[in-house]
Length: 421
Ligand SMILES: Cc1cc2nc3c(=O)[nH]c(=O)nc-3n(C[C@H](O)[C@H](O)[C@H](O)COP(=O)(O)OP(=O)(O)OC[C@H]3O[C@@H](n4cnc5c(N)ncnc54)[C@H](O)[C@@H]3O)c2cc1C
Image (cartoon, rainbow, N blue to C red; front, side):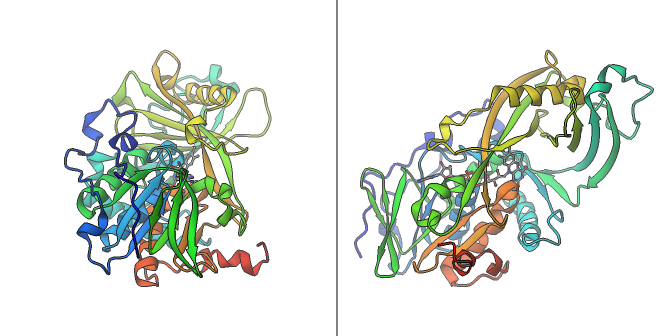
């Protein structure tokens, strides 16, 4: 079968690092990334050619594990790698918080894979992997003025000096951890390119080519064709805009906001992730913002979500000013170290959680199209579940079956059974 590769392949470092961080310590080495002009020239004729569509954490983990298993992988991303939720998420990981639910085994396998990847890739240095304590707290905004040093709960870390009550430990270093999600995703891709020959192409996937009942190519906007033996669609919330998938099941986007603050006193913040029940001063239902200090000393806060239409271009996603304002108020109330004037605002942003109607990710082969797979719908646990999803998908595509997780409950065929076609 002839192979059509965009000529020359658009392997762009700017795709990987469009807004290179000031902190060069955390940037993966890129000097030795090899660009393969044609994967066929260096592959044996039995090597499976796989095109992974979408360069978020799910696509990158899939590309990494597929290439490690010997497949010739091309990753197609329409904007930049980890430009969406996979770059703007909190990066919080939990071993057992999904226990008792449908993603329990996926989450446990993935938490452990994160640990081994951190060892393999020096994630402590390169993408801020660390274990941490996790607390739940109640914060009542209207009490902020009444807070005194004597009314402070002494079980709280000292930087949490606002009106916080009832701290409860809900995660320990054995059960909770974190990564910087954008650095994680880009580090993994660098490794996959450098060591296993993954090629990255910038382009928008328009459709999957099918010959008979079997996939044979991917067609990009502009007409470029990449021939392939298998295709994996990892389009996150854009799955809902891709006809082949949207005709089978619904994926919708939940827009959520975040800010990143850099306190003046970087060393003041301890490794404690916070899950808040936050009572706003004006009344109304409590909100549930989350606070993740990072090893660099910066602090990530997120919350404020709503279901809205996902724009075509990920670069067009911006935060709503009111939601950003609320997050800044939360920060100021929780800690004087995070208040305006005490902390620099490094980012104000928004992104979309990819959600399914039954709340369960969709991972598996698409019914009726041999060789075409999907992995999406990871909702608020995509950073946690990226590695196990990628490893499972690699097994499914290369070996035809998966040993690390039972994928049956994630199969897209559940929607066909429900008659949602
Ligand atoms: C505020 C917030 C905080 C979060 N915090 C956490 C957390 O702490 N822990 C956790 O586990 N999870 C967290 N999540 C969830 C997690 O971020 C997502 O589940 C995960 O990033 C989804 O990854 P993805 O690869 O499926 O999608 P995305 O990251 O959205 O990637 C999809 C990619 O596909 C590309 N694409 C789309 N269409 C095309 C096309 N036609 N052709 C080519 N490319 C295309 C896009 O440009 C994009 O790069 C959080 C999410 C949000 C919004």
